[in-house]
Amino acid sequence: MKIATAAYPLDWLDNWAQYEDKLAAWVAEAAGNGAQLLVFPEYGAMELSTLDGATVAGDLEQSIHSVSEKMEDAAALHLKLAAEHGVHILGASAPVNSGFDRPVNRAELYTPAGKRDHQDKQIMTRFEREDWGITGGGPLKIFDTALGRIGVLICYDSEFPLLGRALAEADVILVPSCTEALAGYWRVRIGAMSRALENQCVTAMASITGANEWSEAVDMNTGTGGIFGPPDKGFPGTGVLAEGTLNQPGWTYAEADLEAIDHVRADGGVLNRLHWEEQLPRVKSVAKADLY
Image 1 (cartoon, helix red, strand yellow):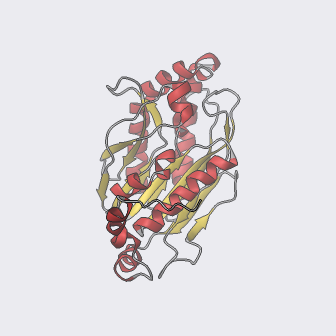
Image 2 (cartoon, one colour):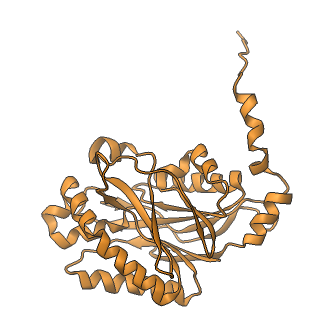
Image 3 (cartoon, one colour):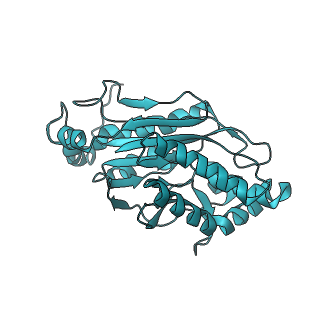
């Protein structure tokens, strides 16, 4: 499959039509370049809060509810564009009120056949849990699609090896991210590359870019798109299939070859995915070595 990952700038929106036009243009560009799977970033839906004005967009709690109320309309738009262009789309994640004690951070996957399902973020960053009150949602999923088996690790989730291991059957793991500083971008990128190494799969990272003075949640963002694989047979020696230019908006593209994934898992120079279980008995009894 050909994957497109977004380095996506948020915009101030005066009306819904502006959002429709923006999203349609982004999807049309990626599809026009042959992409079959489009990945938008974490919290990219926060721009929808601007439709309710500066006071709402600038307030952490009010912005949550503003965006959540608009996500069904956003889903309808994504489904329309997925069908029109024949593509799968991971929509930008959003804070969603969904029956939990507090809102969850949710990304929806849309297919050209009109199907949809979601992945909730599992582990919250300090800002999400201490300031914003976002909570962990439903379980991790592996989506069986016409393109292959797809998993999603939203931003911080990509930094936890056991979450990645739970998706070891996925061919591709999508990593939508929202990172304020360069250090945050590299934490997520290193996580995405590590999960590609451990699972011998392809990971695809999308980012928000740019400054948004109207929001306390997504006020400053650093990142770019990137697509990674294991540095092994059939893949680049760096593990980098493609990377965008930092903080430059646009799409980054790369092919994810499912046969290459199967081959490296079966006969790679190393077999990290197969040998994972060998760690378990060795970490249960760590010996102490006294060198005083």
